[in-house]
Image 1 (cartoon, each protein chain N blue to C red):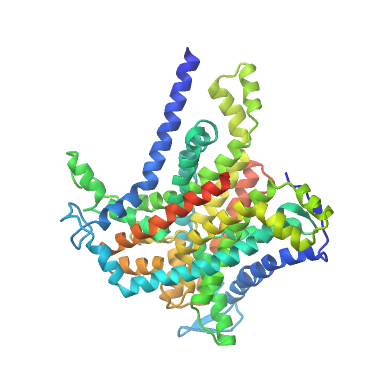
Image 2: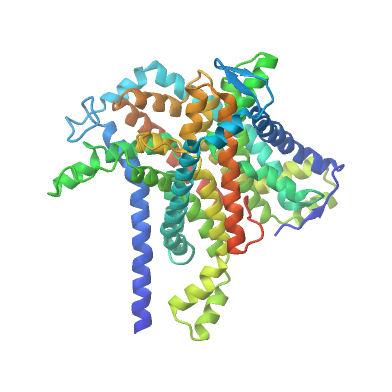
Length: 265
Length: 290
C-alpha cells in the first residue's frame, strides 16, 4: 500500500517537473508568437487588435529579406562542410585505434565546451591579424569558417552515436565479396550511417541558422537574421521582430521532428 | 557495437578522414588561441596595435581589482546556473529515462526545438514576457494581483533565469544519457536487499550517474562563463559580466591586447576551477566531449 502511494508521489513529482520545464521552455516562444499578431506598433499588453500586418511588413522589408538570405547561405555551406568533416571524425574517433587517439578526440570535441562569444573573439583577432597580412576583411566567408569550427564537433557527436552501433562485419562481408574501398563506403558504410549523418546535418543547419555569437563577431557588415534582430531590438522594438521569430520557428520545429523520425528508424 | 580497428597514421583510411578535423581545429582553433596569447604582450596606442612585447597588459590586469570583481561575479553566476540546472534537470531526465516511455519522442522533440532555436529570439521573448508592460504583469494583473508585481527584468535574477534557460537542455540530455545507461538490475537488487525507493535512489542511482552529473556541470559551467546576451538583454547591462567587459574592451576601447588578456584570464580561471572541483570530487579526468 505504502509502496503504491510512494509510486504515485514519485510519478506526480516527475510529471509535474516535466510539465513545469516544458512551460518554462515555451514561455518566450509563445510570447513571441502572440506578439507577432499585435496590430499596433508597441509590444505591450493589452493588444490593440489582432492582425497579420507585421507579416506583410516583414516581406516588404528588404533588410530582413537580405538577412534571411545570408543566414540561409551561411547555414547551407556550413552544414555541408561541417557534416562531412564531422562524419569522418566520428568514424576515426569511434572505430580506429591509433597513436594519439585521445588527443584527436579532445581536439575534435573541445570547441563544444568553449563559450561561443569567446570563440568568436579569438577568431576575430586571428582573422584581423591575418587580414592585415593577406589583405582581406571579415565577411560571409569568415563567418562560415567560424560556424564550421563550432558546429563540426556537434555533427561528430551525433554521427558518433550511429557509428557506435554500427556492425562492422557488414563491411568485411562486402569486402570479401570483392568490393573496393570506394564501393564499401558508397554502398555499405554511408547508407548504414545515413540516419545519423542526416540528423547531424539538420542540427548543423539549425545551429548555424540561429547562430548569433559567431556571426556577430565574424560576419563584418553582413547581417544574418539573429544579428539583424539583435541590432533591431537594441534600437527599439516593433512587432516585426516577433513576426520574424514566428516565421523562423516553423522550419525549425519541422526539421527537429524530421531528425527525430530519422534517428528512430 | 563497433569494434576498434588498429591503424597507423600512414594508413590512408585514417589519414584522409582525420586530416580535415586536425587541419580545421589547429588552424582555426589552436592557432588563434596561441595568437591571442601572444597578443597579450603587445600594447594599444591610439586604437592601433603596437608590437611591443612587454608585460604592460598583464601588469594592468593584476593591478586593477575591477577586472577581478567582474570575474568573481561571473564565476558566481555560473556556479549558481550549474546548481539550478542540475536540480531542475534531474527529475526530468530521470523521468525521461525511466517513466515517460510512451511520450519519450515527443518530449525530446519539444526540448530539442526549444534548445536549438535562435538564442537571440528566445532571450528577446523573455524580455517581452518580463517587461513592465509585458505578459507576466498582464497575466498577474488579470488574476487580480498587483500589476507591477514582476519588477524582475534588469536584475541579476533575470540574467540567471536567462542563463538557466539557455543551458538547461545540456543538463537534461547529459543526465538522461547517464541515467539510461544504468543497469536496471542493480536497482532491483537494491530493492531485493530491502532498500526503499528513496534509499535505492540515494545509494545506487545517484552515485551511478555521477559521471553524467559531472560532465553536464562542466559543460554548463564553461559555457555560462561566456554568457553575453542574457546579462545584456535581460540584466540590462547594469552589473556587467566578463563577456560584456571583453566585448566592450574590443568594441568601445579598441584595445586588443587587453581584450585578449581578459579572454585568456576568463578561460584559465574557468578551467582552473573545473580542475579544482574535479580534484575535490575525486574524479581523475573530466570527459569533456562525447
